[in-house]
Length: 213
Ligand code: G3P
Image (tube, protein in one colour):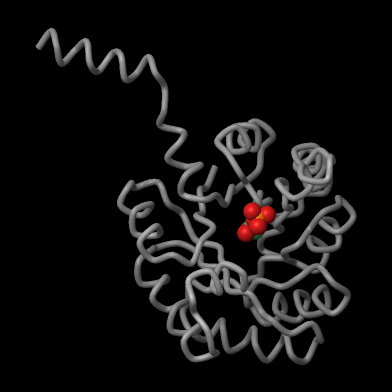
């Protein structure tokens, strides 16, 4: 299972990279705004800065919601760096844009996916990644993990190569459950990745070994 970090915070990206388990980065307009990155030029520079920290894929989201806008933005983003994956929302023109990018050899991440039907459309359009938002489904009393399970079954039934990128991951059990269900990637806050380290028996064992040594 691949681990992506879901942030635009360069310090956190560096910390995850240094841990040695990071496979990529996802961002979105809200995460860029949280870091105070504004304006097209600054946003593009920030994507390049992220690519220079990590070795894996970096998702960069388009803002436009019409086909022509998404194509223009996506082509500009993809030209920034070979690690960029163009993140496109699951809307009608988004599906058309994903198909367009697929035919051009530009990799995509279909975002804001909340149903198995949407995930099937994303795969048919050739998306490299599909991003089901499990935490936001949990927030509205709907089982986010069930969606991961459904998508895994559907993709395996037909051999779709689109990778399931579990998003809106909130805590370490989300990561573990996604791994059990066969998600290809989990994109997580740094806190959820680091929380996987924790076990009181490990702490107790280390303390005992140190004392005995
Ligand atoms: O990758 C999508 C993610 O950023 C959404 O997470 O916590 O805003 O639901 P959240």
